[in-house]
Length: 532
Image (cartoon, rainbow, N blue to C red; front, side):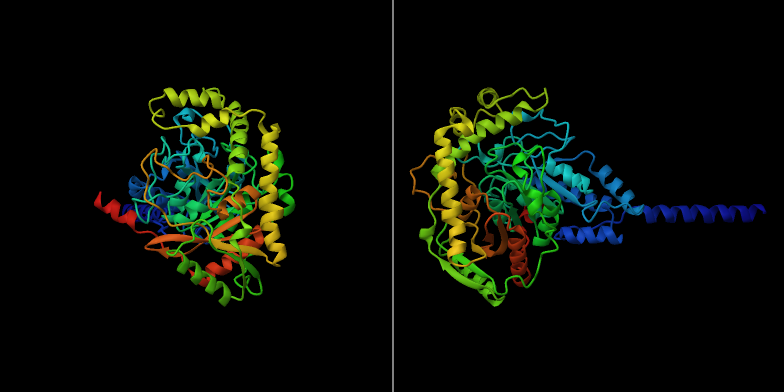
């Protein structure tokens, strides 16, 4: 070969190498409003890579979170996780449909490599050595553990006065109107799902903490039957009512996440029956599911008023058009159980939080609720906030063996289950109840103002019953799906059934979603980012 030919060959090979490197570089991927299911499909087809999707979500968080305070921490190894997923897919070793899909988690859920603070500086050194069961299952499915999002401090169980967000995460803002609340306690999860900071998010609920922020932020939220999903590795309020659940932009996306996180876990004995009830929740979705179904319509609960009534009426019209038969249920069927729930949660919080704190790393200096109170009184980053729930819980004794606790638990369960939801369904030959999830987002209240906390100390009957409290106390599943807006603010439509009816509720919600298409993405947060 002469010198000229050699040079030409070298030039050609260099050019080919450059082209090859360009082809290997991930192309930008637009993630805004892209459903988790579509991200999954694009990863499977090679239309994008996990690295490209993860980079796009991180870029959105960096661009828009300044006015929202949704994100606490981006996982330092997020891109490394994504790259590993891309290698698996290229080698034909995909772990399933969620492999490489980025998901965010509420900051009361343990994920190795990141602190779990529950929004408090008392836990800033809480670096768990292993994942919670929820994160373990998702990581096993190849999910990119993208980061932690904001929460009401200790999932809203510090005090009964207004306290927007947490000391660690600051005050979250609703992306539809930044002067209004994003709800609690899974505020960060609701915002993150709504503004496409991830393909989906995981929240937790004790009483309305998934369904309320889902409704206020215009997304789908599912509170599963208690103990369908393991609570190991989640900072607790009450094992009687705590659960994790998906918060996403579509029902299908929620079904994809639930399919992975549901199931029995020996480390959470309450979940012993979960495997017997778990199904592939995506496979049961049916756009015709409403046809021939009898649904009980509930009006007059919390959130129902002259402003929200037209939106609910329109939703009911869609249900009827899709073949559902609607039966009106009297408000008299619902009883205020908030005083009983207060007794239950105060006792559970002390017992369950103490058990969690005892298992935290040695770097965590608060080992009991009593320690937490002492820290919160003296640390200048925490001492400005009241802590009546901490103190009232710490004053309880006997835990779940206390006679007063047992009496209130028995009454609350019977009232919401056999004499409540089950009776409404059975006596009217219904498959589920439907109602408005709650009111629209209210203006953010000043710290310490009256807040209408669900376990505030008030006389029985003074609190308007809510569907979130009823489903929460019963331990029954509750799905909320966007059903429209009032003055630019979202409201959700709730589907509630008896225990283990997630397949039915998700299929009903999917059918409604496919017929209504009522999710409208927020825009106010973008205008705020431009102004800044």
